[in-house]
Image (cartoon, rainbow, N blue to C red):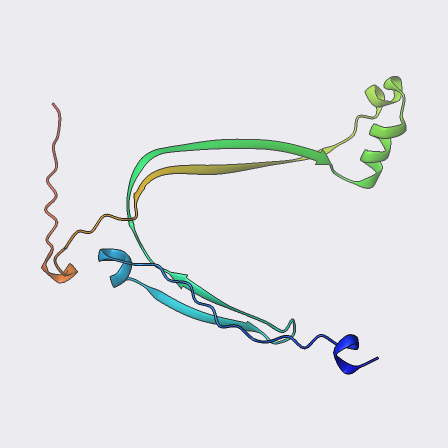
Length: 129
């Protein structure tokens, strides 16, 4: 067997990814190069901001419970109904609230905004009688 039959020697190829950015996306672009030496990995993170409008926001509360100890789980699995009434299992209850925000995004919107130091926000209080 010759060398070329036993081994494959790969060539290297150069590649690039190109995306046009305008306005806010171009102005706020950040790049970060991250490496993980232990895993032998590296990646490039590109972050930017785009214009968006908050459309909807909803919160959902989820309550879930689990047996407090392994003994309570054993009772649930193996005790007959009569024993469960006499020795009911104890539960840990947890409550989590998750908020979902829906946004309409405008990735191609190109606005020219003044620098932040030139923007004044005037807030007035309106009171109903």
